[in-house]
Amino acid sequence: MKNAKIVLGVSASIAAYKAVELVRLLVKEGAEVRVVMSANAGQFVAPLTFEALSGHPVYHSQFDAQNSAEMEHIRVAENADLLVVAPATASMLGKMAHGLADDALSSLHLAFKGPVLIAPAMNEGMWGHAAVQGNIATLKSRGVEFVDPESGELACGVIGPGRLADISVILEKIKSFFNPRDDLNGIRFLITAGPTHEAIDPVRYLSNPSSGKMGYAVAEQVKARGGEVVLISGPTYLKPPEGVDFKSCKRADEMNDLVQEHLENCDVLVMSAAVGDFAAETLEKEKIKKQGDAGLVLKLVPTKDILLEVAKRNSGKLVVGFAAESQNLVESALAKLKKKNLDLIVANDISAPGIGFQSDSNQVTIIDREENMENLPLKPKREIADLLLDRILSRLKQP
Image 1 (spheres, rainbow, N blue to C red):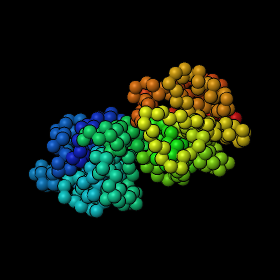
Image 2 (tube, one colour):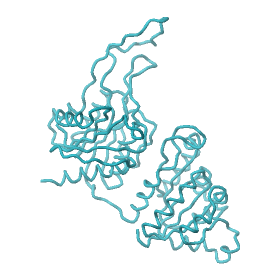
Image 3 (tube, rainbow, N blue to C red):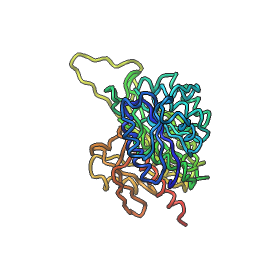
Image 4 (cartoon, rainbow, N blue to C red):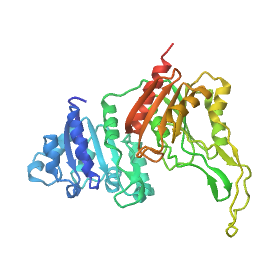
């Protein structure tokens, strides 16, 4: 990214303080960064902070005497290679979608003719609102790219989607504009993600807390690197990555059917889904009623082991499994690798803090068929996905 000319738009979000680190990292990469702020963004971070880090004036008012004489912020738009808006509030998304130009940032957006990348940040309810999603759809139809927000604790105290994506993830996306990768072009991936739900009665089911984030991150990075993706997902709140062939399911047997159906047309199978091991032997037609202090005994039966079914077919595909363990991590992963005839297995300790099912980061051990092990440190799941894809590509190139 050396000498890349980037305009960073900062709108009035509590997450504006994170843009300070983004500026620092972009400058460290050798980019020339100009910051343009919305009318109220200065309520969260002073323009002087961005000026000090970028080494350039910050444009935050259309009527600022120092900048408006030569319409300098418009000149910046004409010379920039990329416009990044991070964080982007619901209000800013609406302005950008509908062509409003009532402050320096929204005016610059209308004047800018190059690629645009947006990283939204807002309350969970606002993110899910039909108006906001409609504005996002409008912008995407014009070629605008997004780094979707992550799920976690928001400033309002609610836990859910809406938190600004990790700065490292935004940075990697920015880098991709200047160093695009297409090393997975022509390679077909079949990826599973999320949990499964095994019903007990009409209102209850057996499941696990898998979020699907790891599988969705792998699918997103495959698309970013030019590959083709069929993504089979159990129930999650995540939005499927752009451009994937998305298949949804609930039960383990439904996921197995979809995997077997699409296996023949893939080169690589990545089984990151946390498939339930057991299901109720009998599905009750009516809700099970509580009977005083009496307990309830459920008889469970094993679900079909999807990876074993794949191994039986001896399909010749490159197969990657995942092992989420709470004890004996390496030993359990190695046993699964051998039993299910895997090429690679990704093992993670779900008991470790910060890397459980719902987290945005992971710390894993990758083990190959020859029992070579590689420990990856704690990283955002998108970065883990990219490193895993590097290992997959390396094996595909082996004679």
